[in-house]
Image (cartoon, rainbow, N blue to C red; front, side, top):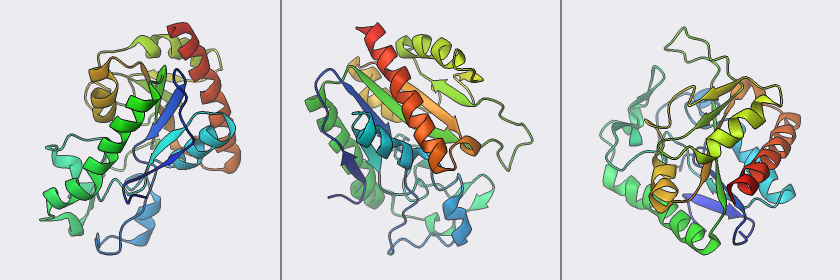
Length: 238
């Protein structure tokens, strides 16, 4: 057991696995963030819906999942160790007082490094054909007036092999698909840069709009669709 992550399912060589870096809003009792309780249920604390979808992928679709078990406000697992936002002093206009002057090395050792060391070992043993990197995004940032119309985004940095296959498949489902939107994987892609691009592993970076990831029905629908798309992508990549 680890404070930083949990794993569901057993990967099969040549199969598909899922990662969910921002799935949890858990804050350890010894790390008081000093924010109102309701913010822990909003997008600044977690990628809403991704935990439930990752669980369904593992349980119902034979896509094992490596799932974060701590809030991104405590330690953002999808950031480089040196990134200013690793322990965010504020998020979307909300100050996070408990992070002012936080011990960066302690949080790296407690959360970030265990998460990535375990993921590295898990992927090395699994030798997957495809990694499905699962995130979600808010329809509108509080600090911006710009709406985000995309229902799903596909993110990538240099390796767009899976993205080029997945985008038209998602569009064929009637979805408004963002190509490296609502933000670019060339800017925010640490986990996949380290564990996929650096190792030559194909990956599909997916962002789901959070007003579409609220209910159990939403979770079931997305899990089924993502499993279908990921399997198509993996098949075409072989």
